[in-house]
Image 1 (tube, rainbow, N blue to C red):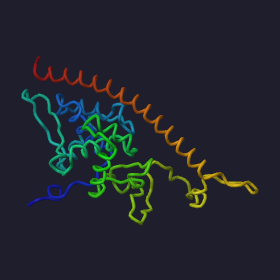
Image 2: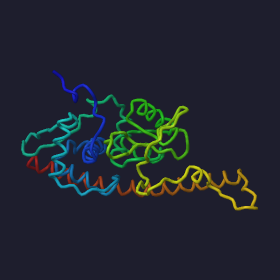
Image 3: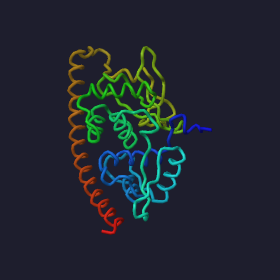
Length: 270
């Protein structure tokens, strides 16, 4: 007799589950020589400062409990070393889902960092699996959208579109306005403040360039040109920030690799 976890892929994960699973996926890609991970290395990976949002401060007990939950879901397994002294953990995502390697890298980044633009996502996911161009990325995203594992704020071809995974629990209220084919889904945005009593009226939101009485409206072509410049400037700033983050990530990965090599040598009695 088969259970639901054996026949249907998991569609919802808690915050700790997403973080732990994301770290296992990431380290399997980026530091395969130190994978599977010990509980200590996994905890360090969950709490690292780079390529994580939000930052966490999990204890090993928290991570262990989360691993047990993921084991029950069939997404994680324990691996014993030859010495038998240290348990290590690996993910079983490839066995549970029919994802391509680029799709797996994309979801790994989204699990670890959340909502991102396509440019940010391609650069970050490419450190695990080559994704040469934005069209290549869009092809993978289209498939994930069709499978229901991805959501987007607009059509993928539009500048500034952001995407996110769909593994959130309903209580988190993390749905985006999905890409439409003539209809629009009215859903909540994950990174906006919902504490106010009323949303801004739609008419006010659309008035991006209000005019005062007696003043002629601005030239639309000038407005479009200014908006394009602002968008390009923002993209350059994001790329600069992203390069700094990637440098920090490389430093962190090097430090983690040194730590994991030390642990392996200790496990082997070297």
